Length: 335
Ligand code: TYM
Image 1 (tube, rainbow, N blue to C red):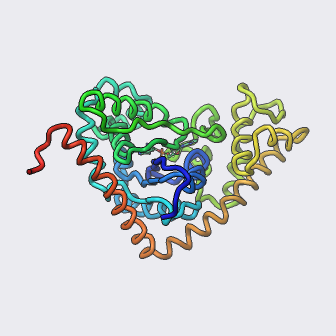
Image 2: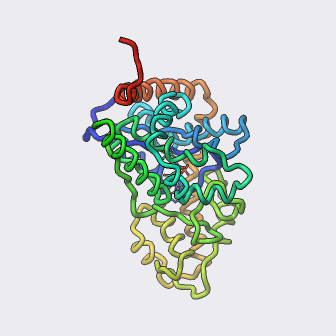
């Protein structure tokens, strides 16, 4: 591993629970790439989180591998960071159990994501769904992470992670570093193309609401053409123009410019041209990522090897924290 400029540890993960959207890309994965040069990074594929809603087993396995390939295709270098599958490191489940005992049911019931998902999956409000933030806290705390780069929708989970860490430290003595969320301003919340007040989500039932990283150019162009805007034909960031604001955010993120520069680029243009330009920009940026992901998926042996080495390296770090926790809570470990 190369020498990092900072000693700080960074942790993040994505669930292999559906087709990834450009929201996941802009809000999370893309930023991870720049950070791998500066920090000691752990990037996981959160398959244990994914099964809190029902998954087709064969599909979950396939998506796990696809996500690993995608991470690498986006520019995450497995030689520079630790890339692994959450369920391959048993310490996550073990720490989650201990953290459960310093977490209150009431806190979990108040989590907005739990309430949303419980409403959407009323037939399957399982314990795992409720316990989801505790497993997430275990992920982060095991690696003594300083920073957790996420989109805005995960802010509440980061806050509860901090609460759990502080509570454990108070009860048992200094054990965990208290992590901070790292939320980039641009692209922290990409919203649905059909309902721009809601976040763009992998699990949206309307396929036109989300642009998937796997979409081909025609599909991408069609989705942007149909994107909901408004009737005044002015291209500007404004609270009363959530659709246009979202498109400007997407454009700026993929173009690598500021939103103000994006506004300027479209001064005097109509919505038709604007949407075409956003679509072209996104499709052109995604094409090389898609090609590289496909190339990587053809070599399953290579991916398996990366993930095996990643899990070994993650387990090594995780076990150190877990041993400390077990000692603090009083588990018998022999002489
Ligand atoms: P997940 O899989 O829902 O999303 C992965 C990442 O993408 C971000 N994101 C978005 N950002 C901007 N706009 C959007 N529309 C958008 N949709 C999603 C999310 O904020 C997230 O950063 N619980 C996590 C996975 C996880 C995790 C962790 C994250 C498990 N353990 C430990 C950090 C640390 C999740 O469901 O992400």
